[in-house]
Image (tube, rainbow, N blue to C red; front, side, top):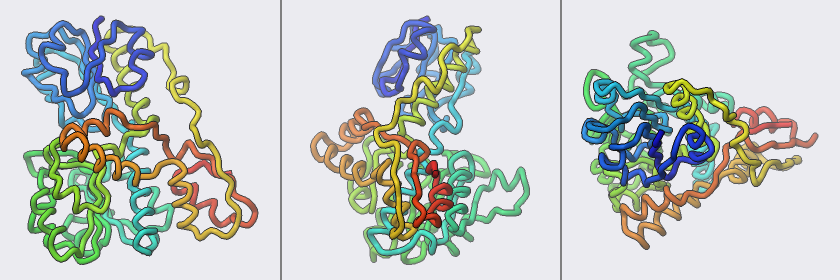
Length: 379
């Protein structure tokens, strides 16, 4: 088999190499000519997989090593008889790590406690559901908005978006991009709703860029300066709006889910799906793909305030300020679109909270449940 794989998919040769010949290409260079003689295609979110890409090819399988699938026209694949698989949940833990790191970083910067915030979560799927569980374990009050789930499961435990805007001082978006229908999410936060955000509100978008009207958000942020934004996803990626980037408190290049662990889970899930599609046994094991983390353990004694301990442990694993600075530096050096893609293509190794073992001394016993709730391994 000839298998075309996005150059940013890790362990591709280790996994897919036992199934066939692996051809690596940058995601934005995967076009119809590149896949015409391929039997399988493995992508990430920056490659648009549609009728124009797959028509006339001999593809039998397409996989995306991502949770989201809005970049894939599944109906077009079905018409061509091409099997499809995604990697649901593969990087959900990494995105939750990103959100918690951002909130703890901003709490330190501005002198507020996460425990005193009320967080509204819009989209309570793989990511939003895990974020809700971890925040609840930290004692943070959460309100959830997920109209499709409320329609299927009943309204208990769910609120509408306007109620979250009224009641919450942090709003986290984790919705897929749905362009049409009763639960469309494109510009879910448009000019009207952005204008209704109360002074002091923090908007965090780690879902899909098109779910927020970027022009309207830029106008609101450029106004009285009474709200703030953490943006990992953007309209028009990679050619994002530099004025909006400069107004965001934290601006990152769509890397919230870019942990090594999450990427390897995505590779592994698609590898298993490909093996099943072509009738071959999956001989690789996920555990064998994961290296030992560079920082595997910390010991905490007494004297640290709870959120200071959380921030310390989070930063031992991942410091989001590095990604913010990297985006500005690379875009100033290489231009907006090329700089955005360069940050993603050259992203440094990043692990997840769960890879850090925190040993808690006798004087810090009260920290143990908090650290465990945040996702660290506590002894």
